Amino acid sequence: MKRILINITTALGLVFYATSALSDGTATLRQGTPITSEAEAPPITKEENTDVKRVRNYPEQPPTIPHQVRDYQITLNANKCLSCHARTRTGESQAPMVSVTHYMDRDNQVLATVSPRRYFCNQCHVTQVSARPLVENEFIDVEDLIKGEQ
Image: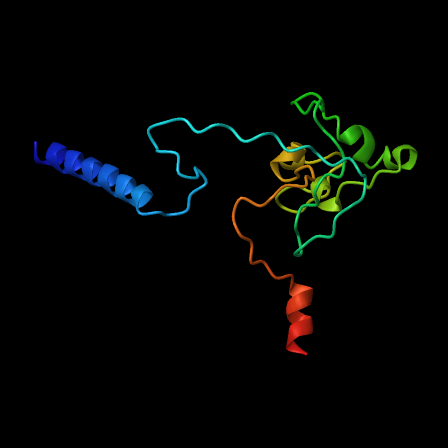
């Protein structure tokens, strides 16, 4: 019985905290919509289709996708991305080959095909869009930091 009362008290405290946090003007992605109602979905941003690669902001950043991928099928049996980006297809497609790290297992052993853990491309890679940031970004590129120190 004591444990139930503690759980109820904790739950009520969390509800009170969440309600008071929203009412104090805290900036949220809900933009003032109460937690008890459904916010209107923002419009879907149009993908860029420029085929111009963006510069990466930090080492090991997955590159963004510079073209549309709306109807690309990526399932257990098919991967549309690899029809252009696979090692054997880049000569005819002129698309960049996926990184050699995608052909390694978790023990860094080289495989003949793309590793199953790297097969679902859109787990890391996203399409490029021109969208207003949802929150302010204070990111400073490492190259800019180095230039500022000199």
